[in-house]
Length: 327
Image (cartoon, rainbow, N blue to C red; front, side):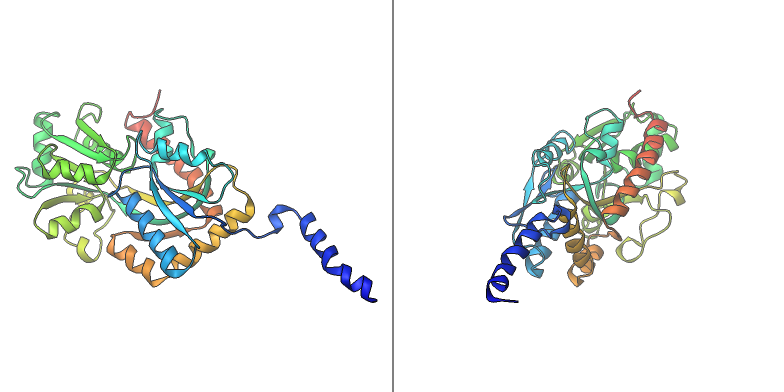
């Protein structure tokens, strides 16, 4: 090879790279990543986003990232904001069954197929709780009051109708013979607001995550009446009776993870698959999962899409059975 031929080789090679399909070239962020949360600070989606952002930063997994809260309309404002950045891997958002439930109930036109599923990181059960000095002393007491007068007790949950909290509340009510549509229920835009309302006596029963209520029970500020798991959980949850063992047909859990906007390309998806796979193996994440009373349930993007397809069918059946689906 003469000098002229050799000197032209790098230029020719660069032309070959430029001609390769975009999917064959790696991608990484070139500006700060936004972790979008469709609810107010304090709730489980916000907590997950901030834990993930901390691990991104401390572990050097993502060059730069920030959490952006866009609360309102049952997460729809945040998710609509996400899709304003179609095809841009610098924007990802927390999501849960509310993404499916909202569409089935007709409260939004956005469907899970309008986004790019990235992963599911954890599974979380639901608890029914009251403040510590509430006259409602047990689940049996709550049931008796509701059977006597379905509107004698008010419920609260965040962040959207049709989400896991709403589903468990409705399953409980239906199981005791009370029409879920008749019961008094208030939907808050974030877990922090709902907790304040419960502690202030503005609502009677808070339907929420264990991470919201179990620490408060340990502090003597709340009383947890039951959890939506099929069997008793370990650790701090061991003393909480399941709804099932109290003759309530309400076994259900939420899943939590991240999705991207519509139109994300294969290299962007591959980047986030690699990042979250590393995150799920860190000691920090394993510790956070335990501290938040989450069950590890990690799925990559392809498996997450399959899960959402199945969950859409399951949620449609549940919400229709509960009379919550749009007719």
